[in-house]
Length: 120
Image (cartoon, rainbow, N blue to C red; front, side, top):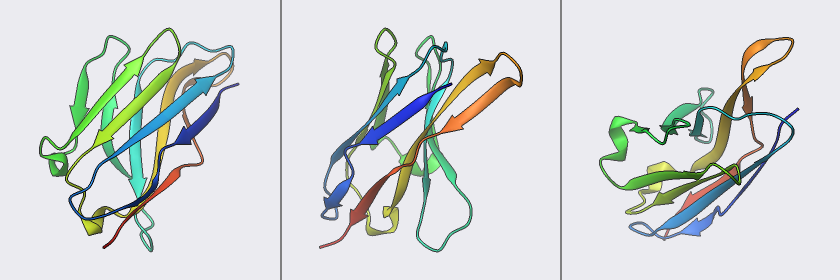
């Protein structure tokens, strides 16, 4: 079983920056990790960035070089440095981790999320 705790959300001004953190725990080997977001009123959650266990990073097109995803493998931590925030990026940001469940096989587990509000 995996537990996830996200932190770092809050209120930021347009053009501002935040650093989001995700801490994973549990007796499970974490493979890929990623940040996702769901805007208010939207039903779909979209991927923001993903990082593999060997630290290869992938970003959604809308990131445009403004975000940096990183991870600390020994501590099962993941971070997202966000810069140049836009009001339309107000959303719940959650982390998702990939692991192999002994019974279910490849599994993605989601955290509860941390809210980012971009407003002046």
